[in-house]
View 1 (cartoon, rainbow, N blue to C red):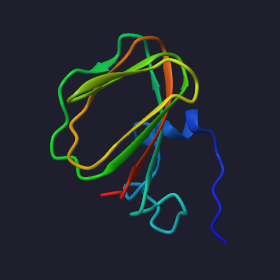
View 2 (tube, rainbow, N blue to C red; view 1 turned 45 degrees about the horizontal axis):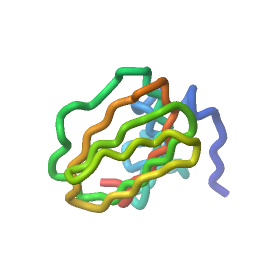
View 3 (cartoon, rainbow, N blue to C red; view 1 turned 60 degrees about the horizontal axis):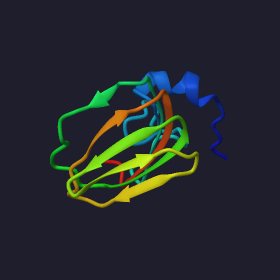
View 4 (cartoon, rainbow, N blue to C red; view 1 turned 135 degrees about the vertical axis):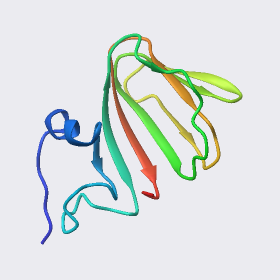
Length: 113
């Protein structure tokens, strides 16, 4: 049986917040997956990725745990202001973001590669 336990705040530091994905070092770990990536992101107020991503081939699901977060997409800006607010975008959609307040985010991307 393959089981992993931990704390997302502590364990996320090892891979820039990512807890599951193909890049997890232990190949025999349940956290090593080519199917999905999961990230626990903690962003300070004002932190941002101002440049647009390019060449994205995965689907992404982003949900706000706490704080206030602005997800920038080609045709709109989506403000995530209430816990549980989310946005999903598919392959090929460029994006950028800015933390309007200290924000905790959960991101799921698939596939992992």
